[in-house]
Image 1: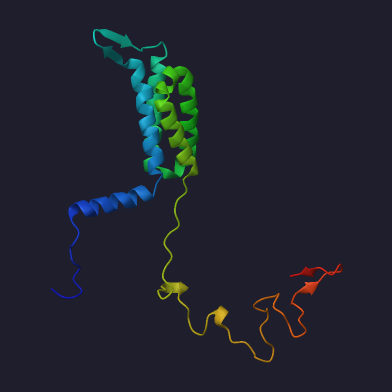
Image 2 (image 1 turned 90 degrees about the vertical axis):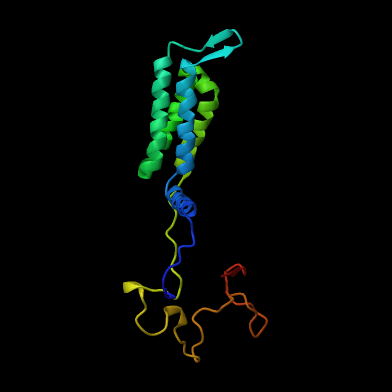
Length: 191
C-alpha cells in the first residue's frame, strides 16, 4: 500500500447519505415532497370510512373521482419536480392551482391538510433556483483559463510620475485641506 492509495474510511451508509444529499441539493426536493404529501389526503379522504366505536362515518362525496384525479396529479407533479427539475415552474403553478381547486372539490382540500401541503410545495417549486457551481481556488487553473505569463491586469505596474489613474479615496483631504472630488455649480461636492 502506497501513500497515493485512497483509503476506504467511509462506510456504505455514509456514502449513500452523501450521494442522497448531492441528489437532493440538485433539485427542488422539499417542494416535491410537500406536493407529494399534499396529494395523499386529497385523494384518500373522499374514499375513507372512519369508525368511531360502533359508528362509521363515510366521507364519500359525489366529487370523489375529481378528488382522486387531483390527488394523483399532485402526486405526479411532486415526482416531476424531483426528476424533471427544469419543469419546476410549470409544476409549481399547476400544484398551486390544483390545491386551490381542491378546496371546492375535495372535502375542503383534504380537510385543509392536503391544500396547505400542496400550496407550500408549489410555492417552494416556484422559488427554488439551481445553485451555482463551486468556484475554483485561485491557485488552480486548467486549460484556456490559465494565465499565460506576466502579471494580472490589477497588478499592472504604474508609472510613479503619473500616479494612479483613480485615487484610492476620492474624498481624501488634499494639500489645502480641500477634499478631492468635483464641485458642482451650486457648490455641492459631486464624486
